[in-house]
Length: 459
Image (cartoon, rainbow, N blue to C red):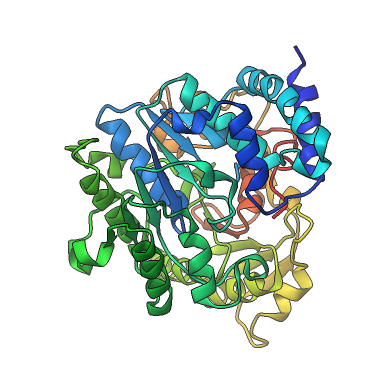
């Protein structure tokens, strides 16, 4: 059996071949594997924003009600195994090696006929998740689409319920340049006769999805039919938009209650979703990590920054970096009114936005300093003297940094965890923008070599 490093070298090679949008390869792969994706119940979730949060909420709800859960999301933040979790336990390194060993000969055989039929990195990882969920006999699995819906590799599942959380402009080069086109692509996850649940959607997007649902004989439900603004369930995730996501998750459990009864909603107060307004304690500062990757997400970020500023009585220090110029414009528009200091950085991704472009998106007249920097300059790794599990930052079974208050031992130790080099004691630092940037920060704070972030999708 190969080592983990040899296995990741193989996966790097797949990743470096690029992402190929389309579903035919995945159809052939799961067929060759005996359709593991049909051996467990699935809730399939698509959407421009909120799909990962809704998956995490549904996982917490079902697990707190006694179900064995599967959770497939992408991209990962630090560890590749985050993408295939069972009861929030990540797929460990030996498990990754084992599943890659099982998949490699199957993938090679598919590629013999035509190299274009060899599974991509994302398809490989999705298949690993399906195999794990089938092998461990999960009671229900939450499957997040990677991109779009109709041609996404996850669209080989036959779900109990399809959820479309939101529709806005993103990945327009692949999904289309109108909300109707984007909605139609995401509506591709709708399966004949299976119920569909939608979030708050623009009118033209909702009409497109309702049309697809009607054509396929699917009952369609909207979170607006179930909840008013002041009736939304509470969740530990910050922001009013997360309460709407919680509404979607609760409504989903109600729609599936006959087969999958879930009597308690306490799981909504225990949702673990790293990198989404996630608060950590570093020495004597508060660090907030928030992935914001498109204009709709940037609007939600602005809402949270406004509330944070009001609560603290001063503006935070902000560290920002993203991928793509349009995302850069919307991100700078959101952070500019709330930055006391703004540090611009470049994520380690091919499509990263130059910091000069980001600064050019800011108002010319401003009352805060702007610094072009790097994460190496802004954050220090933890002392090698203290294991992170003892530092109260990580729970060993889980995948990414946890809030310092969630120490496994119950003893809060912050003195030898990673730290920032900016600001003063008591300051709040917000890191925002690309999810890959958030992953790099978490890697650095864990004191890990920068090898996890490279195993990401190119799209």
